[in-house]
Length: 235
Ligand code: CA
Image (cartoon, rainbow, N blue to C red; front, side, top):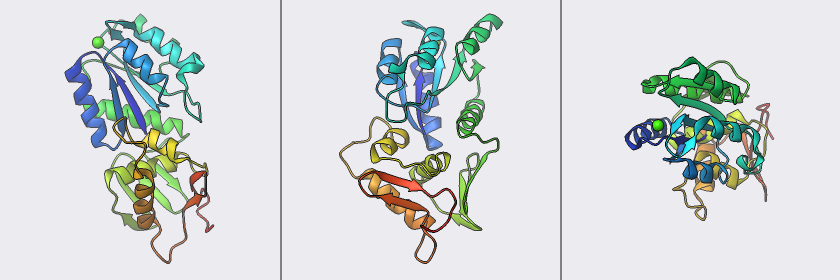
């Protein structure tokens, strides 16, 4: 999952980014309005943590654009990112305005990281149409809160990146995902698009979820990308 933090307070933005990266999300940071617009119109984010009070932009207006302006939906799947509004203003009318303009949820500063983390998890699950912390696809189970995954009864020993990749596959079961799309949603801006990092990570993940002798779950579709089989059946 690829996240954008829009926050002008650098220390706050960095702390949030560090925490969310530890949870396996790919995180970019924008410190002002123009930087945020630049990112939002070039990268297809799954979720935006948006500070309402920016010196160089109106957070409510930015939120409205994210929801309504097609230029803010780049990428092949063109989905509207979830918006978690972070605000120091606790006036009721500001929250209402934020929600009216399409924020999916909000937190009033000062917030704890645990709160942000829980809201982010909840919003990304809502995206996948699920209501518990657990994702289930075929024989695969993934606990997004505890960072654990299983195939049947067998726990999977995954790296943070493999976990993030499996989580992304499991929120889009049955969809063919190009290398570009995986790179965009599971890696951050520091990933080199010309390396074979996606192929390598899919390879190591696949060896863990489908060792020799077990039915394949992640399919390669030549020339198009990869797909997690959604019925868990053998290809
Ligand atoms: Ca601010």
